[in-house]
Length: 370
Ligand SMILES: C[S@@+](CC[C@H](N)C(=O)[O-])C[C@H]1O[C@@H](n2cnc3c(N)ncnc32)[C@H](O)[C@@H]1O
Image (cartoon, rainbow, N blue to C red):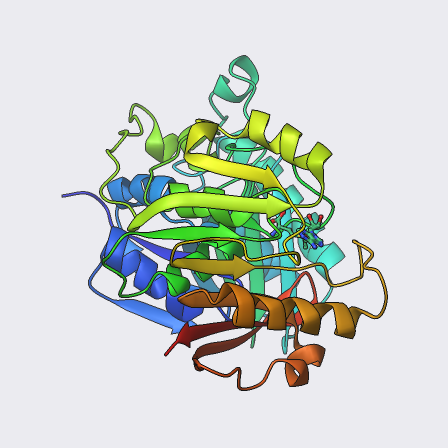
């Protein structure tokens, strides 16, 4: 039987429930504990490998290595030199992410020094294999969290965050993070069985549309940190098949920025599945058929909008709901504008989710046509 590890999946706060549903759907495990900003679960190396390919909502996955009570630096050093680093360490100069709360040890600089000293001693006693030099490995990141005098040491298994999919590199001026887009699409498509067309009327880099297309596709277009760890040595990531897809028949994006659309179209793999068209979405009815809409309009921060932002956004919202009338409408905007978007006629509110996007409080709404 494979060894089971304790894992912590880092999730953007506000998306934990959707991330849990995603794990249950794609790589189920027996117990998942949900806490603010993450999921805690136990799983083996095959799961770790599957999860990195399949899960689209988490930011990264950490492996919890050890936990001990510590209130002074000599004890910290002792504990660190007796810890068995060899199954986990792939590079002699790892990076440390240190945080301390409510503890005697609060000086992160001295904790880092102690970590480096201890690791030097450990490497003297048990030299590291030279793979890191020969194969040009990337330094790993260890997370050190001291809370209430208890230190938890974890290893980052992911490397670059999971939302860096390696799928599409061209981005507009205010792109949405891929894992947010994936979560919102997942929520919009809940309990849908009849194929629909999905439209993003202000698509920018087409993040919603690419995430909708690849939500169920296992992706291994970049390297993950755990692939270089000794505990993974000799193993290979198994490329699993696409299990299913959303019931979406067409993916259609519109934007006024022609230059961006041309670049994005070239950069999307298999771009024939995602249609992007230059168009002002506030003019005329967009579609002749029934469809779902999802939209992250300009907030007026990075992308300037003509006139007052409140006026532009409420005009856009009204136009979409009265003229275009999508079957479902997902709408993402800063929460300080919530008052503008109340009780649209002919629609019922299905979701009003509050979260932070790049430090800004935002609301993700879904209305369903009655
Ligand atoms: C916040 S960005 C969308 C970002 C997108 N979700 C992404 O991940 O890249 C808003 C987009 O709306 C577009 N836009 C603004 N007014 C528009 C209009 N009237 N019709 C179509 N697109 C518009 C802008 O060009 C910009 O690309």
